[in-house]
Length: 177
Image 1 (cartoon, rainbow, N blue to C red):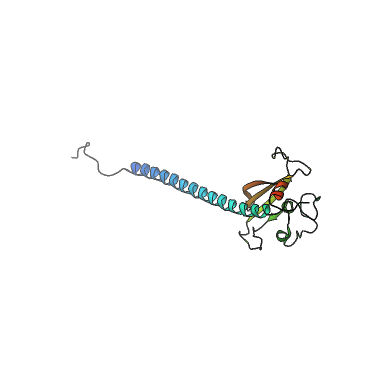
Image 2 (cartoon, rainbow, N blue to C red; image 1 turned 60 degrees about the vertical axis):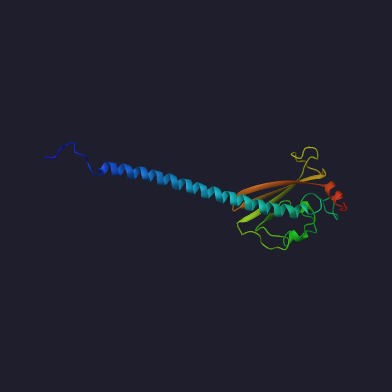
């Protein structure tokens, strides 16, 4: 006869099932962490690329004069001589010519695409108070805030802003009307 207290060998079915459940839970948690890590890495890459695009667009805009020499009294937006339907980037001669424009895909001054079709940038130019540039004003103040929003698909990835002053044209030796 066998002794009931004899040492058992192997796992019971219940022990094997419990072990399998524990291993499965750990594996699912590990896969979740990998997925989150991948999404974070993609988000960081998108932000870095958006920053590059925003800097390119902003540099181009800030290289323009504060206001149009030929039509200094015009409101914000493209002037009558600016070709907004065709190659407006080449004909934009002052910062507010970019107001309201969407650039898709993002391209350089020679119209070479720098981004794929789902990346783009939207530009807004507003007059702001010279003392408190956080406040928008409705008339010429000598200070314009340029905001570039870079988007991928329908999601805004990054917004950057810069101030452009009439005085900056004068210090760079650009004749102002």
